[in-house]
Image (tube, rainbow, N blue to C red; front, top):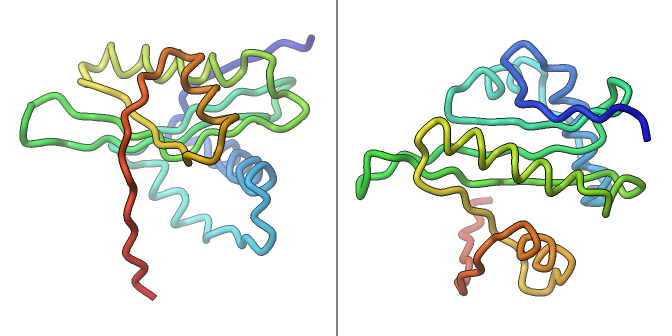
Length: 149
């Protein structure tokens, strides 16, 4: 197997962030996805409450996750919400997703975060099995949305 590198992106790695968004669009089968403006993506990547971790093979992004820091009022220690995580299909089931979860958890532990959490659709057995296998503890909740269009 080629050398695998997993890292947290800095504010100066827009190219890798865009590559990750393309991985998300492919894995999540987002047929009519249109990439946001690069200046917007750069501003997001520069925020201190937004994290991007990627896995590269031979310098090309093949997986990653994005997460948001949530400051809370019950504790001075923030929470971190994993928003998206994907691994290109041909690289799945090779430990890459596990490494991403391990990396964000280690980073958040060092930074003094209280907890990292992620949601998965009840019908997505693959995602549920994956998060259980990484040590995630399931909590039963129902997610409500309020479309604003």
